[in-house]
Length: 84
Length: 414
Image (cartoon, rainbow over all chains, first blue to last red):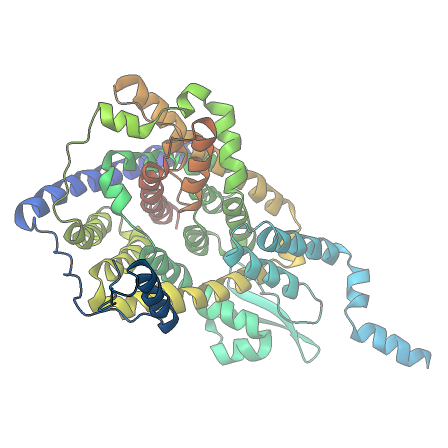
């Protein structure tokens, strides 16, 4: 019986504390969102796309060159291949 | 000639296995766990080392089983044909390795010292993203509702076990292996084997247990609540102007708050948040992140799994206490899912913006498996209803919730 009462008390204290901690975490999160939005609102800008041409497998480059040659009937020429 | 055959027979493990057929039960258990881990892919990273630990610990004469210390810290073993009793906590590690073998060395140096569970928590933190929780902060409260199973089973178990044993058993309801091990080490170390096995087995069975409890407690209409549509109807006013900075500050702030309120939870929550912090800082701490989430985490998991499995010897496992732990652990797990679902149902009574009860069911800390399972259930009822991100909020909060619950049990019962 003594154990049961103690377990009941622990249940109240335990569930209560877990709720308090998570409510505090939620409120803390809200506060941090507010503060960060005010103090450090800038997201880091994404890096500009590299202008240097990307290395392309020779067989792929060859296939592209052939395709361009066929489509443009030999008038077109591949100067640069870039990945999007 | 007959004498030689007798010697060969007694040299092998056959004589001991025939003398005590309970070993066969342990092999069957090891094979079942290996099957679940390998074939069914239930938590293979944990179940496979644990199952293999069970297997190698139960070959008589192999010396791979972990010897449990009694209440006074005494271990009893036979050395040079003489029975010896020594206080294992006063034995130097080389002596443990020499007298008791490799597995006892690993167990007493890494597990019993309480080292590995926080180390694993650091790895878990490094693999956790608090983003979904920060985006759906209110849903984090269900990480508290789902700790109900811990305290409900504590209530029941207090009638059959000592309070310390009941607390260790109840923590299985937190659905967190390292937390269960850490709590049991502090409260009832002699129950470590069966509690760890029960905790990890039920975590592995999340894809079975969550659907079962959901089926028993939720209606089709409730399970069809579409969270995205609810968001459109009642939009979240919170805007995020710098998520990166927020994610860096968050673990530091949570550690501080938890450390002040429940200092006994700091070993777990602190390491969890440290792991997360080194992940969120990015390139400057990427080497630490790599170590925490790969090398250290993997090594810790191997040692933890094997040595916890090796605590499951015939004497330690095949008794009524273990059966009580297996049954109580299942209840704790089920009640925790039930607690989360009920909290959602109660909140739905008072709010316009309805929440899918699956978000409550994932208040357990089995991350991310619980969320994936809940998402699959939601998709069964409505193929467009993706609840994963919402469930991750309560799921991640459940990790903090169960660590806090463990801290409370340790501070009151330890």
